[in-house]
Amino acid sequence: MTDTSPNPGFPTPDVPNPNPQRTPARIGAQTHLARRRSARGNYHDVMRIGIMGGTFDPIHNGHLVAASEVAWVYDLDKVIFVPTGRPVFKLDRNVTNAEDRYLMTVIATASNPNFVVSRVDIDRPGVTYTIDTLRDMRTLYPDAELFFITGADVIPQLMRWKDAEEMWGIAHFVGVSRPGYEVNLHKAGVPLRSVDVIEIPALAISSTDVRRRAEAGEPVWYLVPDGVVQYISKHGLYRRPPASKEG
View (spheres, one colour):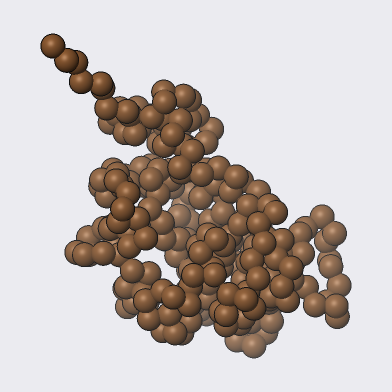
């Protein structure tokens, strides 16, 4: 993420860039990872888990690339994908059935042994709040270091999320963004030690565009994993309802 603010995702002047081929955001994230390891000592004793929450309607290759990249940058042991049940920010939209979204996520992640899919959100009754997801994950992994992966576009909204102050004590937030999208962490008011921003080129793909293409009968191959393409086709997801015949 090309963030112009002095956020932890950029290298400081006293830290040389060991690989000019890598973006400053990526190097900055690795620099902070090294500092955290140094402060913690033997970091191998602590499991490092990424949590990627999302509607996944449908999950697409951009989600998978983002999870893989964050796992590499932060040396995560695994990434848990958590499809939302009733997403609080999308109550005004007709979201695909939770079971379909869960199964598409399982299909999409099946080939990566470090990817896991959790049902905690879709099995929990009521509206889905991130703090509930984090509390459940902390209960399941009391000793792990948690990294919540989210879109950079929501970073400015984090301080307005339910029980925001509690979130910082449970997980480190990693905002992922498509190239050219800038986030000013100072302006967002988030605690700088708890939030990083990194750039993921493949995030130019969007679930909204995939749904639009599927509805219009346009191909979605290579935008989503092959198994998800087949699932969408088999179950008729996102198709425009047939026009009613009069007379």
